[in-house]
Image (cartoon, rainbow, N blue to C red; front, side, top):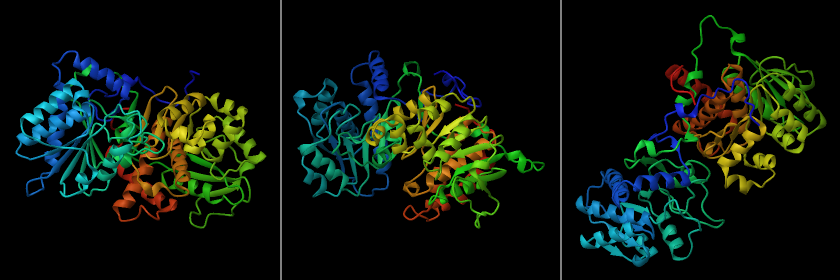
Length: 528
C-alpha cells in the first residue's frame, strides 16, 4: 500500500538531523553494526575506554555534592558492560576515590577487553568483592551504585543470585547509574526481559553510541531515569539513517501560528465529535471541550443516542443528533463513547467516505477491528486519517493480544499505520507516533497523571482541533501528543497529581501549553 494521505507532509528523512543527535533512536542491531564498523579502525579496548571515561565523568558530577569521601559501588557483570564498569573504577581511583567493584563473572570466561579491564583494576588496587546482595544493602551507605551488570545483549530474564542483586540495588535510596541500559531491560522494546523478569531501576542511564528506543517507552521510563547519550567519538559516516526519534517541539514548530487580529472563528475551522451512546455521553463531551480549548473555531457534538440540550460547562458546544450531522467541512473526531450499534457502524462508514480530515478513537477503532469493509474504506482514504489506539485497541486491530503489542510497541504502531494508511498514536508510557512509511516518534512528555478515564478522549479532541487549524496530520499527531503529556507535567509542577487528576483538568492545562508554545516557537524548527 503506497498511498499517502493528503496533507501528510513527509520530506526525506535524511534531511532530519540524525548523527550524534541524542533524539535519534537506534535498534540493538543497528548499534551492533555501528560498533563493529567503529572497532575495525581503532585499537582494541578503545570504545571501552571511551565509555568508561564518559561514565566516570558523569559519576563525578553526580557525586559533586558529597562532602566526605564518596562511597561508590560498581556492579560488574559477565560481558563488556562489566568491563566498562571495571575501567570506570580505575578512572575513579585515579581521581582520588576508593571505589568498590562487585565482580559478578568468571574472569576466565570474560571477553578479552573485559579481562584486560579486570587485570588493570587488580593492578591499581581497586577493591574487588564477591557477589552478595547483603553487601549491596549493608554495611555501607553507598553514595552511588553503578549498574554494569548486563548491557544491550541480554536475552534471558535475570534469575538466581543475580536477581537478588538487582532486588538489592532497587531497594537503595542513593542514585543508581546504569551503563548503556538498565540491566534486565530490553533496549529495543522497553520491556523487562522475561514474563517474571526484573530490571534495575536507575536514576540515571548513560547510553553509548546512540540512544535506544527501549529507554523511552513501555517499562523504560520507569527504569532508565534521566537518560544521557555518550557517542564515544564514533565517526558520523558509520551511523545508519535513523527511522525513529524522541519527540520535540522542533518537529511540529513549523505548524504553530500566532493569531492575527483580523481573524475570526471561521479562520480556525470546525470540529465535529461523534459518539455518546447510552451511558457514555461524557466521552464526546470531553473531546469537544478539548477541541474548543485548543483552538477550534466551532465545535459540534453528534450524539448517537440521547442528545444533550447543551453542555452547561461549555455552552459554546453545539449538540445535534449524529445522524443529522454534515461532514462536508472541518475535521471529524469519531469514536469517544460511540458504542457498537448498527447506527454507530453506519455513521463511521459515512465519516470514512467523507472528504475531511478524520480522527478515529475508542469504539471507532473497535468497529474497524470487527468489520473488514470499514477497514478497507479507511485504507482507501485520500484525506488525512489519524488513529489513537491504546494497547488493547491496537491488539484488536492486529488480531493479537495486548502483551504482544506491548512487547513490540514500535512495530505494532508501524504495522497499523501501514495497513490503515494512517498516522497512528499508540498510547501509553512513551506513546508511539507512527506513519505509513515506517518512521516514528516516541513522545517524551507526560506522567502517570494521564492514567485516568477520559484522558484519551481529551487527546482525540486536541488532534481534531489541530487538524481543523490546518496542521498537517503528522504535525497534528506530534503536537497533540506532546501538548497532552506536557499538560500533565504542568499540573504536576503546579502540585496537582499525579494521583487523582481527572481528564477534565488536562484541558485548561493543555490550552496554556498551546499558547506558550505558540508564543515561543511559532514557525520555527525543522520538519520531519
